[in-house]
Amino acid sequence: MLVPLQTLLERAPGRAIRLPRRLAALYGRLCLPPAQRRPYVFSNFVSTLDGVVSLGVRGHLGGADISGHNAMDRMVMGLLRAVADVVLIGAGTLNADRRHLWTPEGICPELAAEFHALRDALRKPPTPLTVIVSGSGKLDGSLPVFASAGARAVVLTTSAGARELARRQRLAPAAVRAIPTTGPTLSPAVILKAIRQLEAGNHVLLEGGPRLLGEFYARHLVDEQFLTLSPQLVGRSRGDRRLSLVMEQRFAPGSGRWARLIGVKRSADHLFLRYQMI
Image 1: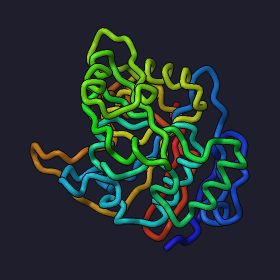
Image 2: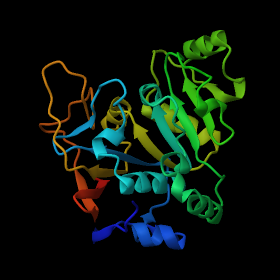
Image 3: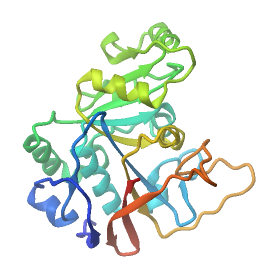
């Protein structure tokens, strides 16, 4: 059930976006700064109290198990997709939810009309561009994100990855961007440069996974973090596959990534936090 969020703190920078009436009633005020020298990158995740963002169990890899299928978490995800030009994901996120469309209505269909009205008012295409990063090119081109008329998707990959995708003969050439590189992966700076060259827009919503997010944090290329804090403890055991917000990166001591709290909203026992990275 969609129930308006209670705003506890609001000091986000940028110009307020004029939201359709129902979205404004549910979310409140939403400001988003303009892009400057590079695309503006904001991330959105849901986490348990003990910092887990994925249970790492087949059939329970996504955020729904973390949030407890919370309707307002879905609403916020849809809203952030609705104001984004690009939704950026890694191949692991694609494989974790193979039937999903990374569109506003793909996560919150009951607000589809409001999301479309918002994007129309912002003079954006009906859906954001889904950009999928895959160094290897080992993707299934028959998935809905590529085949659905309701989605737009581009794969950023290496030269070797592009050859693999061509061998599989599943994706149109226009849906693949091969980026020359000396290694098997693409750096965050290269990814953002490619997104700018696509001319899809300058507001990039990074939805994961934790390894891709960690690479962006390591290069200081995340501007904001939206984080839904779910009132659940799930724990970890030695050697399990449960993921935290950032994986395969270590910053502290001495080089931790710090943030300024710029927004707090509440829905029952869930907190919706917003941080500006400093």
